[in-house]
Length: 116
Image (cartoon, rainbow, N blue to C red; front, side):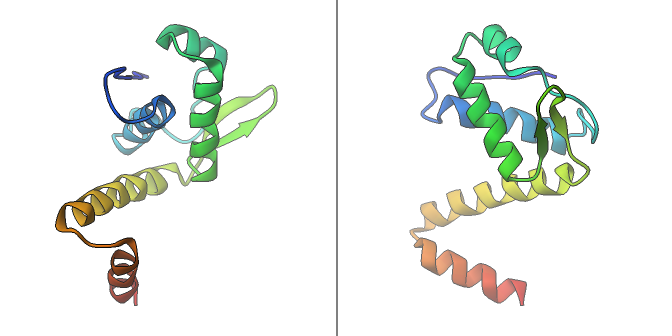
């Protein structure tokens, strides 16, 4: 899997790592059951702190994209593709809302109306 980070980006490094995984899942370059690299190994290859990778993995776990288990590592879940795609779409929606000057409350109201 290809992880990319851009040190000059304003996005936090952990979010860049998480976004790389989300992108790989949504593009089906990784599939449910696939293992992600161990945090130490990934941190070393990207030349970043291991805690940064662990924070990215924790965010992905909280989103339901990966499962974290001792001795087993980070494994892509069966629901990963849908969650990764929704996360990407939500990020696009938030960015578009900001460009349009829409507040978070207004954006939530719009989403609630469409969800019903």
